[in-house]
Picture 1 (spheres, one colour):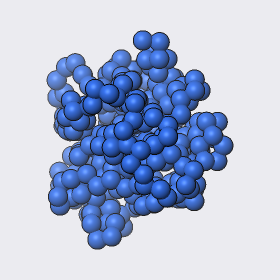
Picture 2 (spheres, rainbow, N blue to C red):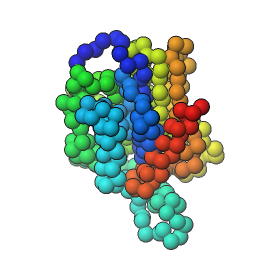
Picture 3 (tube, rainbow, N blue to C red):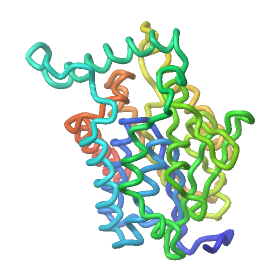
Amino acid sequence: MSQANTIENRTVLAIQGGGAHGAFAWGALDRLIEDGLSFGAVTGVSSGAMIAAMAVQGFVHNGPDGARAEVRRLWESVAAANVFGPASASMDWLWGWDKTREFGNEIAWQGLTNVLRMFSPGQLNPFGQNPLEPLLESLLDMDAIRSPEAPRLFIAATDVESGEARIFNNAEMSVDVLLASCCIPMMFPAVNINGRHYWDGGYSCNPALRPVLALKPDRLVLIRAQPRMRKGVPNTTADIVHRLHEIAFQAPLDAELLALPRSVRLQDISADTALAAHPLISKMNTEREFLITLFNAGRQAAGISMSA
């Protein structure tokens, strides 16, 4: 694959990660492509990395329609597997659907947080099983992703020892790379790639802008998957941990945006309105109805961004 320092298509795309909140990014990208967006390169991290990889292979398969279809197939598979489903789905009558799902997840994650205080991920998951692994193996077309016709793809993971972002390109793409970019260290063991161990890329960048800006684009489209602002102070251990992650994941991106060249036009699709209304714990809610709610919110946010 050519590794030229410029791209013919002068628009580049950056997709944040955020667990199930990545469905917001799915919706935003779907609307953007529907309205004519194409891009020469895309950078992603965590759930944004999965979206980016599926969009790239979809463009190779069938252009814009293929990209939309492949990203939809990803999220339909996530919903069907219900990877991080709620602990309880039997209390709909009490508060209604949204509150029931979020309350179920809160019970599950508060319990898991307490368990993680006493046991390491290796003790809880001695075989290193990750429910995303078989899902990604069934979805990814590495030949398409590595095709010379594919948009440039950059996926970040965090090197556990150095703390630095490791950027993987099309030629280096694999299921392990995407698992590394999505690796939550409290739940899963670090992913070993060529003797180096990696955690979620969001700890070092969310996502990495450096590789796409090095291509000298005219336009950067940033799709966020977490709110920049969240009112109130969390008071449960689970919510505190999640808010700390949001803050940590935001800092590297803020630093890169401050250094954005003036020649690059930024289209920033905010997730504040859509995601700040949901509790932090909801990023683990992979119920189909919730994902579709975020998908629709993402489409709406993209539409607002385009009309601004």
